[in-house]
Length: 344
Image (tube, rainbow, N blue to C red):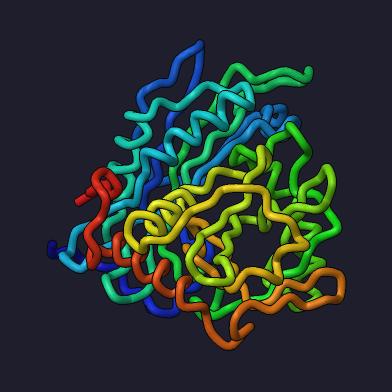
């Protein structure tokens, strides 16, 4: 499709906030979601006693829009984002934003900002951030009566500079989420909890943390903003950690399908002990922002656990997983039914 693009350096735009022309806004009042619509105003005005400011009632999602090899503008499995946001809202005592309205709002917002969707082959994409927060005033510890749902978009480059080059992470002494807490939902408060640990990791030269389970501190859970996966020593099994505190990543669930049904790997979702990390041949982090970021080294309190060729290059299975998944997203690999949501 022919479309007019903004004059941007698409290959060097970075992963950062860049306001686009339009965003979607809907309000929840008097027990119901009102009809939403597009707004040109990037600012949010709320009451000084809004529930988000005092009790952190907020959840969000992250997904991307792409231009495919055929010139279509598409999103990748947004139905799963809509469903996960409904689960997050329910757990935080917030009203669920209806799935069909979510998908309609997504389409409307991306269509209004087509000029910001990076061209095919640039390596960039349009990041889409739906979010919901308590906007009504509340001073007692209780759910708000009013909420705001918004979708903003922005063109972004790779989350980790250098693309799919392996990074090093460190085993953290901090907890990402409490047992039976909010680790399984996409709430802003979880990410606030990880920031102190992330700063410590960054000062040590590490890209992220590997958070162990908060109960026994023996098992792998998540990174600060991504799920982990591992490849067995013989390269035949795709393993992901299992825990009630891990966010059900759309990317990770998609990789499990790709690994089993497209690459012929065995797939295991189970508890992964820190002590067994040396037995794996590959390790990686996966999520919407980074897609896949190979991990070459895990530092466990001074001891380096090296996977494959370390920081030199990604492992062979990781390369196949990344090529297949990004191929599906960009239209060069046939997608499983229902995975691609066409925008324009």
